[in-house]
Length: 146
Image (cartoon, rainbow, N blue to C red; front, side, top):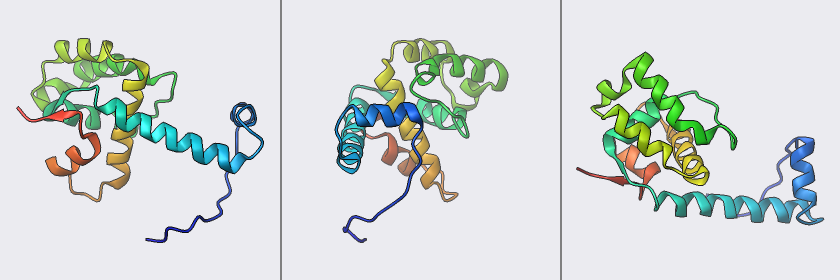
């Protein structure tokens, strides 16, 4: 794997461009620094979360193809409520739906975002192998084994 930096082009929404400019004049530096901080924050935040394997499967199933952002990720509990009512994902994965919804309600915005990120990375890397080891890789250290 090449360790040399490479140039990429991105388009910035005006509101994001404003946020970057407020943090320094060197966009490259600001974006690198802040992305590093964000990903470290996700990794550290996963340490604050405790999920069973079935709860993690519930999340990846529920969020497959979902688009949650910084404003909507905190509503994971509402997504789970709908997933239980409309798709019976709690029964599918052997999860106590009501207890899991309450658990999700207790998560901070950062915790919810870390779970969304773990789920997105799981689906991005998924090559058709949906085994427990793959799941644990993306949710570690949040997952515990019963």
